[in-house]
Image 1 (cartoon, helix red, strand yellow):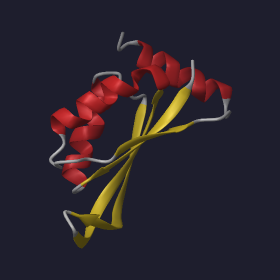
Image 2: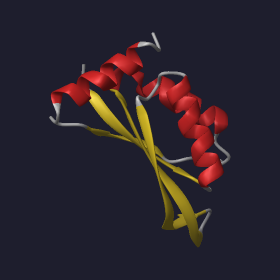
Image 3: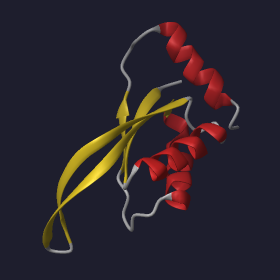
Length: 107
């Protein structure tokens, strides 16, 4: 089973914790890390914007991507939240097995 990181941004730590807990509690991610105080610079509706955000990095299986996106959209405050995936290529075998074990419970 292929593993991926889900890269997600949130408005603040409270929202990041809500998203992270929803993903872990529903076995859609084995673990979620939250990185505070990131600065985002982006175009939105024709205007340059900057904002402080929290970045989430969730460890999951590739086959759960669609369900993970659905869950994020359920609890996220943004009109168009960032949820993208990056493949995990190799790593510590026991850790990768742990991701499988924790997310297999979602089936």
